[in-house]
Image 1 (cartoon, one colour):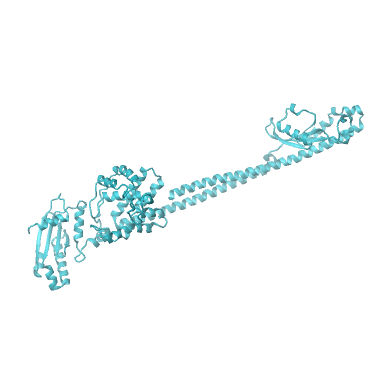
Image 2 (cartoon, rainbow, N blue to C red; image 1 turned 90 degrees about the vertical axis):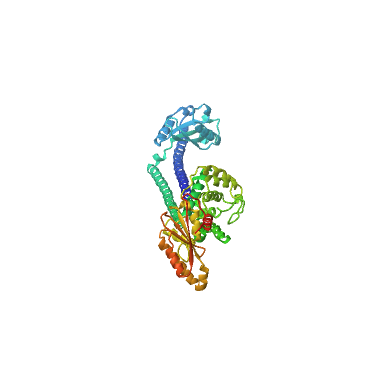
Length: 564
């Protein structure tokens, strides 16, 4: 997973944690407020229950005392005496409640009471026990508590003729008390605000902690990504310093692979991944010897086996963090769709898809750029070869996109493997320098002909010096003396032609490549050296047309049929 995606997921995780933390603290606040509300309700119930019990007891006592003192007619009319009721209402109001006394025979259906109160009265009538309910007062819109205390007939009540149709235990009526339930802010304002402030700071602390961790994690991932990028560019820089062509090739492959995934509408993270894999797909070539990597001829089987080793070497370099997500891609970018590729011989969809994409991009760039052993193909010729390899070397699905994508790309013009500085010349020297004289050898001559278009100067003249009977000199004086003589001849040629390119080929032959029309042919010093050692030299001179296409075979044929 890319760092960009990890940072994105990390932010999403912080958002989710913030949401859950908010829900959790809100739940605790709600639970705490609910408990406080229940506590206030329980306190109100206890208060109103106490008032109702005292009121009922006072009613029983008052009626019993009056019944003892009054005659029968007065007993009958006692229910119309409201002085007691008014007294109880006054006492109730003093405690912040509203008291009322009702008969049990009152029709509740005809009363304009809230449904919650009606239900409480019905429950009282059925159970003959205290009943209560809460309701919202329509006048002030606040919560109120309704409490009803049953008035049960006792022996004192039965002695009164008013109730001669009743018996002990019957429900005579009830005492009802209403009281507004105070809010937590009213009941305990200090506790209310302390609760809110405490939970607010707890929530803030939790949110701060979550986003602080997110910031630290983001910085860590950004730092890791920065180190990742620096490590990658360090590897690329290492490749470029060793072989500028390989570095340019890797960048082009990365760009081509990126274009292919963009055409397939892959995500930004996937495109970024394959671009990095393309940049590093040939990193393993740093362990391939220059003599093989720069060889301008067909590789021997053993040499080709070393070249194939580079994909495994790339994997071994990238299999650890922070490049592990690239390792499998670069390992299999030389697999073939028909299963004949390397290193694992994977076939079809068993090959990682991104490896298949890089294989197409790699092949297209290899065909359209100049290599040490051949000229690059045209874009059309390369696309034709890709099309021919459908289902064999490449995935047909990828080739369909490649035909459209590569049609619009602009091919590079500077893809030579010619040395550009002293370091590259020294690297080429291992393969193109004559180990005896220190000048160039036949391989370099072939390389020059393969890259004439890349040379800043054009070859205009070639001199060929053939030392005759040199094998007889070696037999007479020994190989060491023969080597010393060849070095002396090469030195004499350099003194004669200081600006020419000198090559020793086929042991005792020298080629002198001139870049100037006006360099006269002169073999006086060479003649002098060879004559003093009893040898002869044959000199041949060839002028080249500036636009002439020439190869080593053509040159050899011209020299063989050229008169002295």
